[in-house]
Length: 475
Image 1 (cartoon, one colour):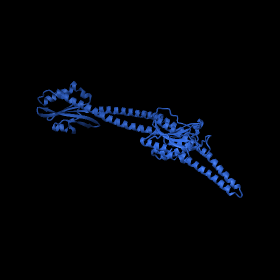
Image 2 (cartoon, helix red, strand yellow; image 1 turned 90 degrees about the vertical axis):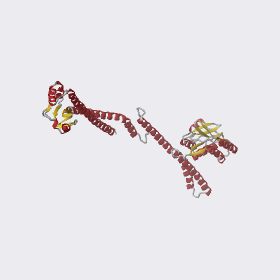
Image 3 (cartoon, rainbow, N blue to C red; image 1 turned 135 degrees about the vertical axis):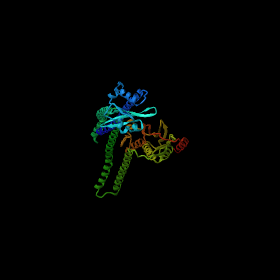
Image 4 (cartoon, one colour; image 1 turned 60 degrees about the vertical axis):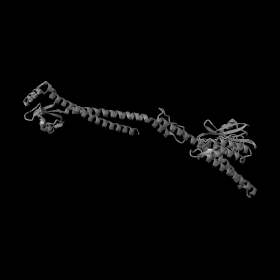
């Protein structure tokens, strides 16, 4: 990439230099030619201004002979200008007998019709700028005067300037190419370091990070993005390893139990039908437990994906009221609604229902019959808080800190659960962009709260209040 970028920069520079040198050469040539033209026309104007009032051709010839030897005409000789005066009925006077201006094709209009001429003529290998004007005596054109200036000096100046420009441009291009090579190398150095670090990172070692030291530009953003991606990969692989370890550990127990019961039946020569039925029921229970375990593990795995949720409008008042009315099917408790939030949010209603059912089942598992269990919700600080509150056994601080871990069983649990319920609830909250908060105290009960982003909500306070009254009446 460094070579390609440098070559591209050099080519772009060469193109700009060629265009610039060409434009400069054309402009300089035109300006120098215009300068010569001004000199020629100025000399002709000076000659005409010096002409006295002439009575005829002889006086004009006499004045011109005197002019060509006077100091005023020295500038013509120094600059190699050819001066020619011709008369329609007389001789031709010139300061260069070898260059007959009046015989040139470009001089034809001046000689024949007395029209002014201006242009470039060739003589051998040299170019001359030719200018001519008619001489009028009274109302009659009696001849003309021409002046030709060589363009070789200005061409030499133009070539010298062009050579200097080309040499300067070549050196500048080389310097620019070397500068681009150095700057691009310095710019791409962090990319090379990133590539080297990425090449050293393997599945077994995802702890390496790209050490970027530089301004917070695009490369800094790239390094930060790559480091973030590596952190997510490390977290994902770590979670995968823990997941596999937990699954293998949790599945080992039911498989061992099933194997043990089947071995009991294998040892029986003539098994008692009652024993077979008992062992059959125990094996089915373990298989059901394994099935629930696999389903909940799949749910946890799906919650890691970004497209797991089916978004839609969820009326939280209706959701909480419906769940409260279904509480009696989970256990005979004093089900109630603390308060209703009175809003509609964008969420996955099925996942929210799953989360609340898990929390309600946990509350039933850790409370005695006729113990109060309440659901509620409120909007605060730009978030919607939805909770399940019970007045059961509660949790110790060390249990509360770990209760959302997969397969964690607290000391008061009877082993009926799989230890995945609160992990699934936390995953559902995080999938919605929220979090799970747990408040609990031994002997006083627990409050588990889903804190979700407020998002786009629809106020329904009056309907919420009536629903709250209905829910309390049902409780």
